[in-house]
Amino acid sequence: MINGYSEEEFGKEVHRHVRPSEPIDTIQLLKGRQEELDEIRRALFAKGRHIFIYGDRGIGKSSLAQTAAYQYQSADASIIQIGCTKTSTFLEIMESIARNLIDSLDSVEIQTKASLNLKIVNLETTYKTSSKPETPKVSNMDQALDVISDVREIHSDKPIIVIDEFDAIAIQEERFKFAEFLKKMGDSGIYVPIIFSGIATSLDDLLGGHLSSIRQLKPIQLSPISWDSRWDILVEALEAFDIDFDEEIKYRVAGISDGFPYYVHLITEHLLWAVYDDPETNCKASSRHYMTALENAVKDIQEHIRKPYDKATLRHSQDFHHIIWAAAESDNLHRNIDSMYSSYERILRDLSKKEHSEKLSPIDRKKFSQRLSTLTKESHGSVLRKMNENRNGWYQFSENMLRGFVRLLAETHGVQLWLQEAKAPKQLIHPRPQPMGGSSRYQSLVPHGVGLKDDK
Image (cartoon, rainbow, N blue to C red):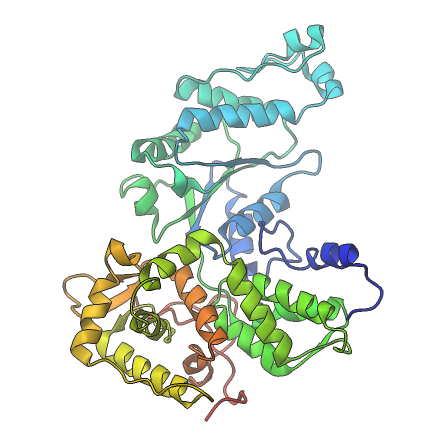
């Protein structure tokens, strides 16, 4: 129990420190992204430049986009933020920007700005009728430029636009139009910076090869956050409530999260509630609270993340659980059959050692290989996908965020899949370690010499 808080007060205070269900928009809560924030800030000094933030689902793209935008945006208005959907088109999004601009104006601003020579928003008629103007119809690129011109003219001293979830736009040609528009904006001299964000492994995925290299666009690729940044999220939240904690919890949360801020925030939220709900806690988070938090976090994982795993394992042999767990053990994103089979055997040995557990016998390597191939099929959620033809027998998760869910789920069953990273040679803990090859993430590792109770 944590004295001094009603349930409502505690809940509100928790979400001042962790935000698993919404993007972060303050630099105080954004951990492990200072280098990227600096890059964006400096990039936007150049007139005509825009930003594209891309990476895995749950890696913190929207949070970085919003935080960077609020750093740039002048204090006389809020940012213009637009979310994309599957059916969004270029012209519809430009109309949404116009609507956002109109909605941001109050009656006094409409009165003072009615005489301005605007391109597409008609404030003069609005001023005379004391009503807000209709959203103008945007029918072509030139009218889209007029929208940006009016944003520059009447929104604020330093306006900025965020276009989030850009990858959701299903029609490729509609995405390509944005790259063409950025070029046209640059040629016209009309400029309001735009920060895009989207799920992708490269800009080619979203904008096409020849359009992704336009000089107006600064790409920012996000990697998993470092161990010390993961610790910061957890420790600062616990310290805000004067909660003491076992040091081991810090390392377990950092390891199991796989570097995805979403998982760190989610586990931390449930850890705080586990301490709050315990009448005998004496304001200290223990391993028991950690396991409660983990179990509740697994239940709260978003449906679209867990759905492929459920499809692969429901109504199928329990072998599929263990094989997927084996695929998630290493910090290498790409794994071959031999290394995964070794992980699989280790997992079964660990499970068999548990009290009251039946002895589990591994399937043979040939059947294991067949199961891996099955996990690439839609019938089993397409959990895994094969590497290219030149690397036969190599696999990776179809979505890296699913690895984190698998690690959380496995640990609720007593299987830790991240200890390999904790035992690796010492590396500097740095917010953004540089990758040294395509097959490994080379994220920062837990410091050498840190031991956990279960280490052998």
